[in-house]
Every structure is written in structure tokens, then in C-alpha cells.
Length: 502
Image (tube, rainbow, N blue to C red; front, side, top):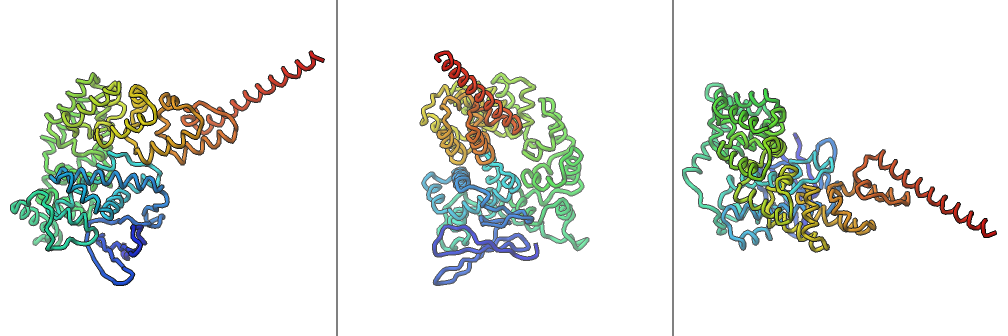
């Protein structure tokens, strides 16, 4: 990108307009214009997109008109929940975390922009992100900001996009370690060092850039993991990259994989990486799916066998077969990152309280077990309880549609429920067919009900949504034909009756 481009940002303020420019080196510049006085504040962030109403088109930017206001509002709440969890994990009290969230509207907008930038193709295709996907997208970015700003991160969040006031007393997160800080600075400076022998960047930096990474990405990785700057090209990085390419990982996925798990380049190919993959294959993992699995969750290749076996033993404890476990690992490799005692066991206990067969649920939708009971699961249960369903009925619904708890409450369940009330179907139909909540509202649910209303007939709820377009039309015509035949039959009976009377 040779020229900066500008967007009129959608920021809540009656006296302020903000214009953003993206510079050639992908640093963010923000200028504020006030009605009476003009101030200019600049803050560099390693980001390419801000929460703006960008034009959709060949530049790949996301047009926010494609998204409903309720989806944006729901995503903001999800981003706030992620930020709150992150601050608490850094040792902040509930009160300080809540205060920070109340002052972080612009930073939350910035997090949403990161989300849109990372998954722009999904949004343009109309796909909604789950709570777990939002968390997985934002947590690494928050970690990188903490690595960069340390104990002034709270100030950065509260004052975004203005730099923190230097004489302000920063809220202490953890104290910095001078030794680690010095190591980190040396590692980051090494990224930009010129090789004295060739007069160019060091060979491993050049190699990473050829893979599609830029200097800022490499610096960001090094801030989080300083050892990355010292890995040997021929001895560490190149062998691992070439092996992953041989396995079938697309070259364009390598920057994302290394960014998610730079430690991959530090482990031995023959003693760790290959044996670990063989170990997972012995557990039933489909080796043909390695490219997808590594892209989704590269950290699985760096876990110890004891860590992996903790999760596997728990799955066996639930009565899952080896074949089923292999399929779970293939579809959801990050299941091995969930703590047995903090995540898996409490979540299993919660779903058992609803009368759910936990083993079957985990096989069908393992993503449920990465969700917070208090933040994600209980609100969904309370939603259905508040609408007259029993715990037994809710258990039946989640058993029939495992992804029910992974969708957004505000963006998915509430609007679809409100629409369902207008259809004339009984509430019990949702117990029989909870998959209703999994269909796209604007693209599937509303159009199908509109067409059915036009025909003047009523199909079963599952027929309305699950049938293909051609079969749906056939079902409508068949229903109409039966209704017409019924009318003709009734009319014939009336005529015959009348003739007999005469």
C-alpha cells in the first residue's frame, strides 16, 4: 500500500470526528478534530485496521453495513468479556477490571476491528463467530500488547488511541523483570540487525519474510517469545517449515502458524515433532487432516505426552472409544489445551445436571467444553428457563443440537426466538427441532417462512429449514395439492348432500 487511505470512523461522539490512515509500514495513525480546538495525537500500534466504516471491494476491507447493529453490539459484549478475563488473569481485581472496561469503549472498537481484519472472509461470507473463536482471536493480541506495554497496559486501554500520560500513576499489573526486559529488548533489536557479512538482514529474518511475514510480525513474536530471534535458520527454522510444507500445510498459512506458536521452531524435528505426530496418530488422529489441525491449533505439537494424556484419560473416563477420541482430536485439536480440573470436569458436571449424555455431547460439539460456565453456559440455560422450558427439555435440546450453547445469546437466540413467536408454531417444536437456532436468520429462516406464508400452507418446522430449495418447493406444492384435493372432496360432499335433499 503506497498511499494512506482514510475512513470516517463510527465513534460515539457528538463533538468529535476521527480520521484514520494506514501508513506503508502498517502503523496506525489517528487524528482528532474538535469543533473549537484542534489537537493532534498519534499512537503507533501494530495493526492494519481500525473500527471504521470501510468501503467493501477489491481491497478486502469490511463494509459494516453487511453486519446488523445487534451483531456488532453482541461482538462488543464478547470483546469486553475477553478483555475482562485477560485483565483478571493478569492479577487485577474485579473492581479495577470493571472500571477499566467502563473506560475502554474506543479500545473495544479497536478489538472488534482486529476481529474483522483476522476473519474478514468469514464476515463477507456471512458467517458468525462463536464465543470461543472470538476469544481465540483476541487473546493472543492482548498478550502481545501486554508484552509491549507491561504495567501501563491499563492506561493504554483506557486512553486508546491517546498515549498514556507519563506522570499518571499506572495501575500495577505484574512488576516487570529487568533481566527479562533486557533480554526482550536485545532480541527485538536483533530482528532488525544487519548481517555484518552480507550487509542485509540476518538470514533467518530474510527467510521468514520470504514466507510472507513482515518485520512487525517478527518483532511482535519476538516480544512474546525472545528466543525466536536466536533460532538457527538451517538448524531450527527451515527444517520445521519444510517438514510442515511436506505434510501439506499451505505456504500462506505458515506466518499464522509461526505467529500462534513460535516454539515450534525450537523443538527437535526427529526427537519431538515427528514422534508427537505419530503419537497423536496412534490415538486415532486422521493424518490426512494434519494441515487443517496444525493451522487451527499448532500448539498441540508442542505439548508433552503427559499433558495430552490427562485429557485423553478424561475422555476415556467418559466412555468414549478410541475411534471417537481420534475424531474429536481431529475436529477440535485444542481440546488438549483445556484443563481437566478447571474446564472439562466442571463442564461435564454442569451438562450432566441437565440430563445430557456428556460423552455424546463432547463427541458432537467439543467446543462447548472451552466455554465458561458462568459467562456462557448459565446465561443460555437461564434464557430458556425464562421462556417456560424445563431443565429436562433444555437437556433434550442440547442433546439434539450440540452447538446450541456456542452461539451468541444476544445476536442469535434472542432475535430468532422473537421471530419464532410470530410463526404460530408451538414452543414444543423447538424441543423437537432445536437446530432452528443454527440456521441463518436473514438468509434462511425469514425467506423460508415468507415463501410458506405466500403458499398459504404449513409444513413441519424441520421441513421448513432442513430441506434443500428444490425439495422445499416440492413439499410446498405437495401440501397445496393435498389441501386442494381436500377442498374438492369437501365441496363434492356438499353438492352430493344437496342433490339428495332435492
